[in-house]
Length: 281
Length: 336
Image (cartoon, rainbow over all chains, first blue to last red; front, side, top):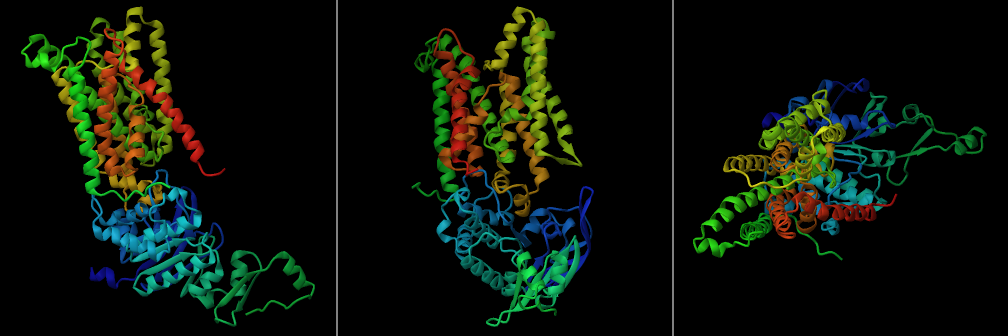
């Protein structure tokens, strides 16, 4: 599989996708390498989740090219794809009383064929993944009894247990408290450093600014910008794409960007000359 | 504080299955040994010719049929609950039972005296007709839609029910009697041919469903979650629909629509042994078999020499259990 190893983790070539009659993605072209953390940003309905669904093989009716580890997604059997691509969803409902550990063990599913019981190694991988997601103490709890934030950590652990080459996160840290947001995002950097491509949807632009090497900004299903974080997250572009006034500054302490949406009250105050004027960069 | 349940190991699964297998064997032995005539194993051992006839040629085939049908219905129920991610699904949600019942009733009404013998074949044909119809109606753009499947099944059951009422209203009182007894569900003492066919169908369908146990586990996280774990959803849906329908068709054809086995057993087993389908599905085969054998034993002996239809007994047990389950779910549901 030297070919797959040397190929970029993700290659989009004029990707378009639609649900029935409504087009959700238009002509996306981008290349993402192993080892990167890429933020997938954009307002509601801009196509972020649709892109995650294309890359994970759920939305297979697409036009153009979408390659993962060198192989076209629509031509890759689902199980084979799941060995390379793991998704952390925003949330998941579980009907039956599966425990957190059992849910994490499901991450091993793509690596087994047919009817199989997990080996000792699988259980160890699952427990390690739970520990890395800060969820070791939740192992024996039924998933349905956990809080949304706890569930997000377990789902994160499940994706780690899948040992993917491409890790996709769909707003997977949104319900976490600050400590776990930082812990899990730190993990994203570690995972990337170990050679996995990480693509994460963020609504919190400050988290994206802190953790992403590059940002892919979507607007109405089109690529609004794709580049290094500091180049993409500018006042002018964010204000245009998110259709609300956004203030971008540099944190004096860390040197990373601070993104602040302006309330209408703040905008009125600025317009009346009662405050610092927004920096135009 | 509940005792933590470790993930399923092959060893724990084997322990459960050995226990349930022993229970099934005991149930079968008891079912063949006990009955209205009072003849028992010791009469058979003493070389009593009547005992031989009653135990081995009347009771045993019926007991074995009960074991196969009870097991098959429970497996179908467990697989469908896994597929629909809904613990209230049972083998009859697919509309197959409606079609089968209609076929059986038509045979009684149209074929006159020969009807009784034709009922199983007619019911099986009705089930296959329903299967094809439901599959067609629930497929759009080449994909089987689970929601449409449920709705189509419900409508087909209701429609078959209406046609059956119509047939009942034009039937003679003798036919009416036969129809009522068929619809309640009662176990015959089948010829070896029927037994063999049932055993074969149950074995193949159960094997096909158990093979996909890991996929049902993954599906607990939703269709999209399962796909992202490598599950081929379309194949899983079609296989489950097809094999569960076969199990249901065989059961309804042989014994009428015996209720609640396919709902009750997967539940009891899930409560006792956990939700993992790798254990749940084979356990349902053994547990469902034992349950129906014992229910049939009770139906034969409780009011001896009269016999209750076994469907009455399973419904009497299953109805209250179903309601208890609904209450329990309502209480356990998250706020709002």
